Image (cartoon, rainbow, N blue to C red; front, side, top):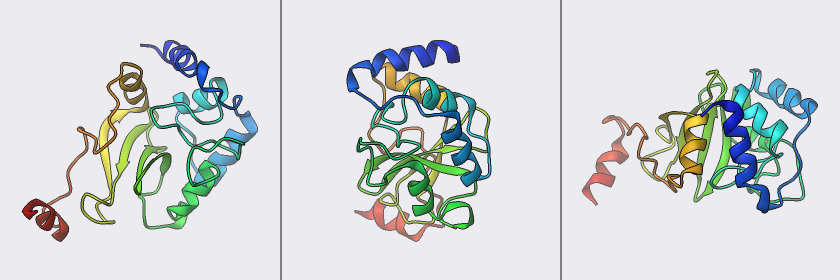
Length: 175
């Protein structure tokens, strides 16, 4: 599926959700300044051509505060700063919280990659140090899986498991 086809498919899929209108280019630029990196092009198109949040399996956080509730965070900048922002140590630089899945679990997107590689954040599986893990799939694949009804509530089946150095892994495996 091309990016054009994916944008159209997502727009069609969420048409009945009553989502906020698309974000502005100024909103995108402002958030890119917060992160210090360019937003992956497909994500930018989703915000600019589909809606300012609410698309995706569990409703992506909006770029700016809207009257809609997609997370405990009012917008993506608040979520990003809650994880420590550009100077924090909770996430590797360039990873951005995208979707709140509840119970401290988030889906993240990597602004360091042009195709927006997706990551999982789940401290329930091990510990804070091992909470972020790559999913090994791009934003396009993640959205395509969702449109096909193959989205996962978590843990993600493509998640790279915590390494053996995590003391909590051994505790979880013994339970």
